[in-house]
Picture 1 (cartoon, one colour):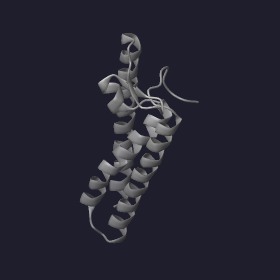
Picture 2: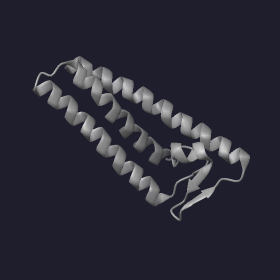
Picture 3: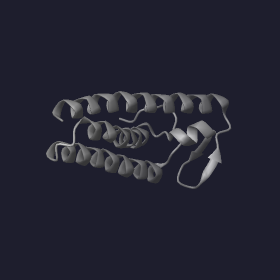
Length: 120
């Protein structure tokens, strides 16, 4: 089931964000494992938070069918190029969905980073 009432990205754009998100999450996990294996300390695990955040943003954007940057600009890309969102209520709903993506990403990042710190 997808999240959000409105969409501002099409299927191809969602796939791009999902792939980028999975890459970010994977790289974050690699950094945490490397930090643990090389005994680099907790700073490396904390540094992985950026990768985790970007990864979660990508995955959650794809799931919510909402690009955070496009929502902030009042634009959509349904795979045929950027176009303005003319309906004010829809634009406001997209901004709210984008805030939700960022909030969920931040919460997930804090949780994953906390676990990374526990194992480092």
